[in-house]
Image 1 (spheres, helix red, strand yellow):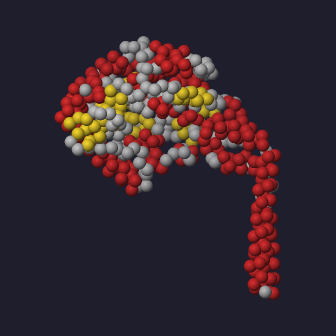
Image 2: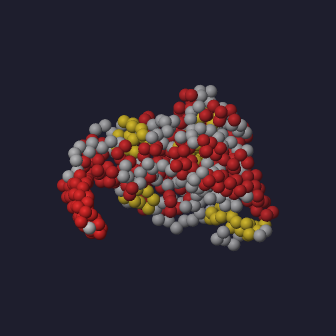
Image 3: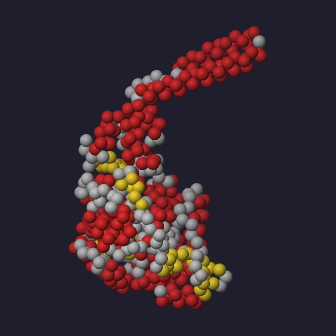
Length: 520
């Protein structure tokens, strides 16, 4: 495949705050710590003091979590490396979408893998470990229970509640039987592992374990012990709410839209099958949609004895990540980059280093059939991101004058009426209104003729227009980018080297939109 890159602005698909962050707009500089550049890692490394005892805990937890699968040498080496003080992580996080969900999940992982490799080349004295943070505590089942393959949507039906990572995956067997050509490792993951978190680790490790990707499930008591003081501060003093609200207001004053909306308490109460918000009512702390009500001393004791029962929301999860990992960079999509910019004040308050925010890789894949059609229609890569009618106009009339264009004729008619109006004025000035009224009727008639001619021209070029529609339907299904709709199996089933090709081709430090095209 060939790589062609275009600026994010040229795609017309990114928010102002994301584009301004990429372009280093001065007004945003107080909302992050470092620029997304390879040179920034030098300062990030020098300022990242990470307690060695935390490394020992992290190593122990990862060793335990990998016991259920056959650990690959590259993963084992990276887990052991995390015990060393010269080892750092670059991290991305994502929900536990079944069958890996949309394509951009794969691009997130490829980003951290290639980033770690390239950082090692630039800073050979240090080790860099790519990490996938599983959002195992998330409870939005409807967001993760479906995926699209070859245009068809498949949905996992289940009535389970609570954190999705704990959910039993045995009922996915029904779905497996419906999907043609599904690779065996999916079946093994969903039928041999005991829950969705372990199944996801099995599947993602199968795809990326040889690249040394370390997969972390942070839903662990020992890891949350390191977060106890921050859990208490948030629940009893609401500092995160105050600080995030302040940043949100500042960003809104700069005319940026908020991405996350902090609450006074940014933790859920979590047990098996349950993940519900905690709210303060008078002198009690209640768990929503339950009968559980706790005093301050009771909830403080619960945090001390069972920190695993407290699950951070979208505001506090990033802080938790940076507390338990020796992390330098977080890789996310446009919305993630935007909401992290609301959080720096929280990191500063807790004296937790703010990581380098890196956009994930953005990719559009042009299959050979698509490339052939584009070549035949003389369409450029940049054309694909324009409005359909704009592309259609170029397609039909770039090399010839449009027959339906009657602007010149209408101008001649207008000049004739101006002459008539002048003569009418010489006779009776009151006739001017009548003359111009008649001109408006003729003008409307010409416009109707023009519409009919345009429709006839387009019907004559039906084949070209239908080819254009088929291209856009493939690359932007339902008007959305391919990477947000299609699953990687659309390409992997026919090309098992697909992921290795992505790793070989894509550079995470080139902050542009990547278009990959198969040779025609």
